[in-house]
Amino acid sequence: MPLQKPWRDLERETVAAAPDRPGVYELGDDSGTVLAVDHGVLRDELKTALAYGDGDRVRWTETHTLDGAGELTAEHRERLE
Image (cartoon, rainbow, N blue to C red; front, side, top):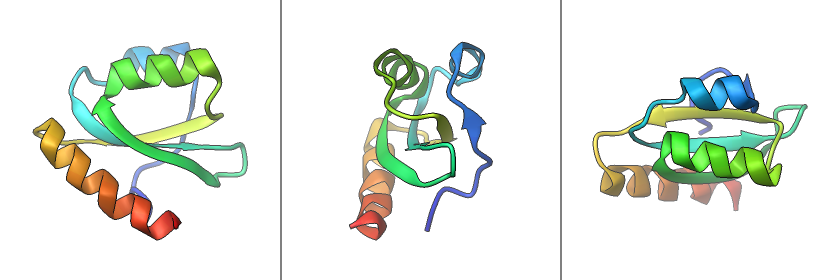
């Protein structure tokens, strides 16, 4: 199941608005196809994704811990395989 959050354009303003907390994020293309699912400190991860042009859109959900983010990421990656 995809993250139940709306897509946002992956741009500097979006990255600046991302929380500086652990979470899971999905990167997508312009049509909303999920290209990648990963986790980490959201703002830091999205800065890197933006710098490398890893996607056109992003959506995320916060978690309380990095371990929790890792577990949720594993669940979401299973559905992409």
